[in-house]
Length: 304
Ligand SMILES: [Zn+2]
Image (cartoon, rainbow, N blue to C red; front, side, top):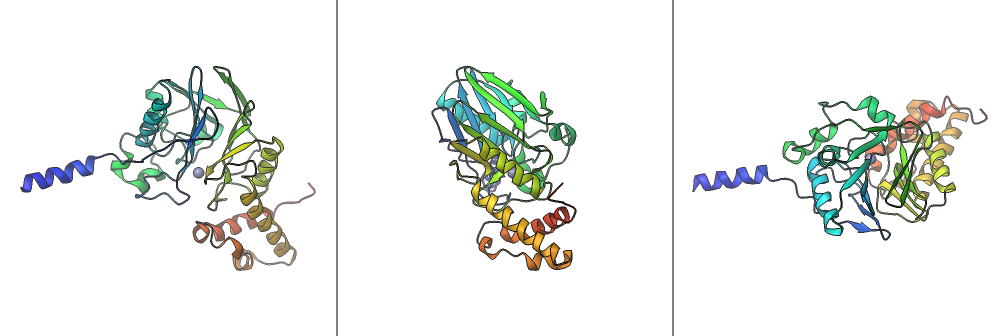
């Protein structure tokens, strides 16, 4: 009996995390998996991120590979149910690890990995990741850090089958110092990575409030019909609006505070923006965002 119980416990411990991924079809050949709008946890296995795939005549193109090897392998099973086609490319929107730790799975399947310069600079095989610490060994099992095959410096165009992909870094710094968007001009679908957030707040930790607002304007100027952000469920043509309003209000209130000589010690009490209190991750991220935006705006001259 004792042996049966310990065998059972052992098999549970070794069982891979079940992500229950269900692709949502956005157009005739564009699908996404939507993660929960919350922080990384053991319970969600890092599935708090959106990843997508595009079906072409010659194979799939994946946009962001997700938080673990297990996640990518389960996403692949779902893709193969739609069409028995290889994954030819994986495009990584930026270097935050919830977006690309599935890369090693697709690399094994023969896909080419494409990403920004910051990935090339900051991501090294063997490095410890935030994800590994947060989700635990079993969920992380098999996950490896791998290098890119193609680094995008500013612009990279790709055609697979008859589907055209424009890959572009819009501004020098927005969510990070290397944010790629992927635009499908034929269907007017834009994968925005973490330049667009919905249903939760974003972090300005590695980013820029000015750059984020510029990037959102540039995204809108393309008039996409569908905009998929890195987090959150909303994908309509106006999906930029909530995050843009948050940043615009923050910028205005901090600039007013700077004009009134409010110090950095007082700023987070001054710019509380209670209308966003109910938004997920407000408690964790808002004060820090105000602090980071203050540091940036203090040195920023609108007329330059
Ligand atoms: Zn993210």
